[in-house]
Length: 90
Image (cartoon, rainbow, N blue to C red; front, side, top):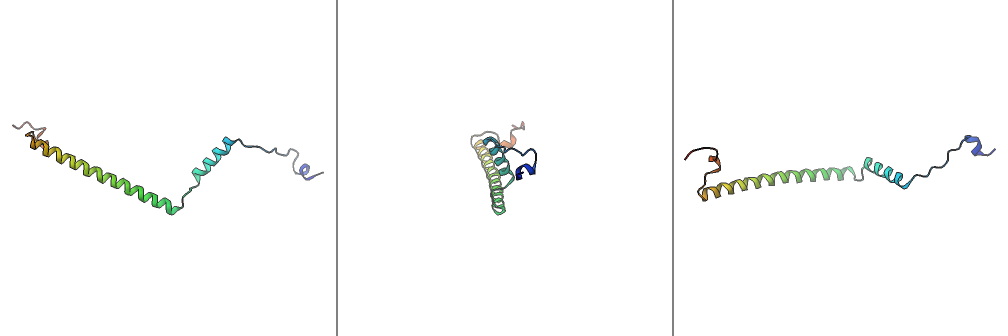
């Protein structure tokens, strides 16, 4: 008897995985395993946080400038002030 017959009565046939199955396994393992070192991930987080804070600050400044310009234009052209829009004062 040779070694294959001793090991099991039904030797497992070699299964060839389809390319799609191999690709899906590679994608799953890629999601689980980070490709960046921890330092790189922390640096990316800091950059993302800085960008978000900068965007918020810029939007606040833009809103303030637009409101100031609207107020100045309303006063310049003799319209009511933005503060007086809801009031019925003459």
